Length: 620
Ligand SMILES: Cc1cc2nc3c(=O)[nH]c(=O)nc-3n(C[C@H](O)[C@H](O)[C@H](O)COP(=O)(O)OP(=O)(O)OC[C@H]3O[C@@H](n4cnc5c(N)ncnc54)[C@H](O)[C@@H]3O)c2cc1C
Ligand code: SF4
Ligand code: SF4
Image (tube, rainbow, N blue to C red; front, side):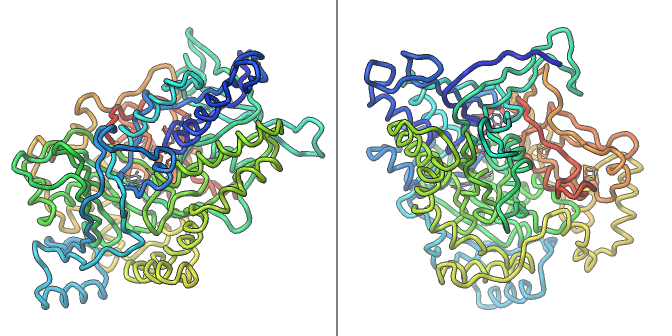
């Protein structure tokens, strides 16, 4: 048995994203106003005479290394900072103009349905295709980020983190992955009831398989009265809680997307105004939505979302992103631009439908991992922030009343606040809005409009299916390429021990990318630019192929094709190999694995564990 150090805290927090930013900002203000630690103010239960001990652990090597768009209405953020001046936050600016743009396919390689091809012909015949694009005359209210902000998530998190740390009331530890929640029998509870008693940090000084080496340092157990879980869409702590406590009836997380983006220096000739926002759809594939946001000082974010309902065996976001920036509508702005950084992350697109139990004995969930993201408005940052702020208000209420952090008390103080808020109201409208995409893009778009305009009363029918189930029966590409040819191409790539996605896209008619060494660079170069991806030594691999024999018999090996960092590559005996020096922790391999474990748990054959390293860029 390994002997571990134990440390006591009052509140232990997992992850520092916008949700935790909202929690810690609200909490530290209240602690500070109460004269916390001083006689008469709030005191720590574990260090009497001191303020409550609040410790936050972030797995990335700095607190601003997250990835997001971001354009946000910032209602919750502004409620926390009523005097917010966007000029205080680097890369932040008010939204000035916002356009919704339908992109035609100038190449003819995308997989368009008959209905979409007909719509393209009609729009072109009406003379509405300028620069291979049609600017929709108005941006629907549900998409519009009225009075909103264009931001960089990394810069925003750093700005928030600096203020929280300056309060002196919270410790934030970057580069410290949390391995697991400490789940224990509830003392004095009825038979079988469990509580979360804190967290365990990841072991260090181990080899890639997790075996101790000479520098072995077992992860410390942090015991706390309240554990706050804000580890985002694919966080391993939230996932372990879900596995242990299950999901509420009817709730599941079967809709995902990987969002990938470039941050670029626009060419000097650019006249694009900061605050310009384009939302796009139609290209590079009808299933792939895109965005282009202009920050101050000639910097822009440009990216795409590749969803789990895109039934293609070659879902390679990086190459699709390159084709996206080359679209004539965007290229007129981007020709001559220079890549500053790049990144990707999963989005939990089930939103409220994927909401877990929000609280339990000794723990609470906030942010995207708690189902807060609005899948209709494409908005997650402000929602995450607001859930964090709501939990902090609840914690203050309970501390004031000297009530413990039981499930019942957290439900009354936190869940009730959340249910009464705009996050819940809008989340309900959005809940089933994307069901139509299960049948196709056109039905999906109609369904979104239907849900938006009826306030969620009418939503398209259709129960989302997990990606691995869809991929098992995905055959629509056979309309253009026969399954036999796909298998032949796959076998050829396997024999050459190379991934299949490039051969697949070439075969579909996508032209080679005209690499220019500054914006259009190889994926390997993008990984290396400015030393952006790094892996810390001494941790076990965080991507694990659970049952190698299943991989050996897996046909699609989609994990290799879609890996955002090319960190999963063909390996011996058909089992992929993982190179963590290239992993950007997007978490997309979990939901792109096409094989379910035979244990009936609905888990796939990839486990995504706590790990450090990854992207080193605070601009994404
Ligand atoms: C490309 C892209 C574009 C987007 N565009 C927009 C947009 O325009 N507008 C918008 O509102 N939203 C957008 N989103 C969604 C938005 O980014 C998320 O909804 C939001 O970041 C969720 O915040 P969070 O705090 O819940 O989680 P996260 O931002 O994911 O933060 C969770 C944190 O927990 C850390 N963590 C995870 N596991 C552990 C562990 N084991 N130990 C310690 N720390 C851990 C992570 O490193 C991370 O820092 C976009 C997302 C992507 C990927
Ligand atoms: S991890 Fe999943 S997708 Fe990848 S080879 Fe193994 S079973 Fe197939
Ligand atoms: S291996 Fe890393 S980079 Fe590749 S999909 Fe998984 S988390 Fe993303």
